[in-house]
Image (tube, rainbow, N blue to C red; front, top):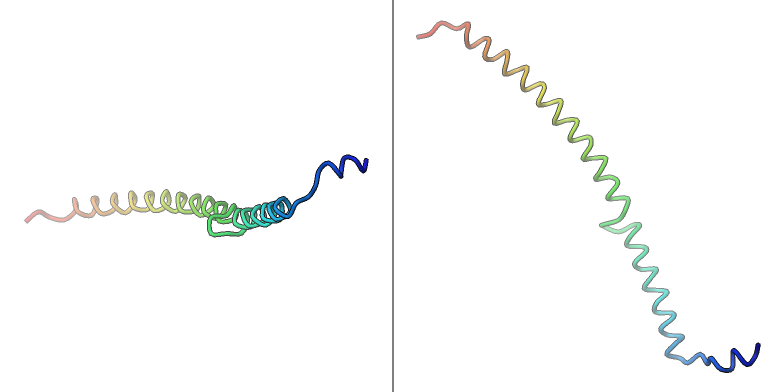
Length: 80
């Protein structure tokens, strides 16, 4: 077993690159889960989109009803 470790020597370059890789992976993971473009933000945007689409449908329905009332009232006025 000692022969295996003796053949593979840890040089400072390898140690530094391993440490750099660990910190870089941690940085990327933190951006992914808590950054400006994170998964939480994406989920919030999806739920906000659904709420806005429901609001659009409600307002379109209300607008159609109000337009119907308007045109009915407009036809009741005498022409000049």
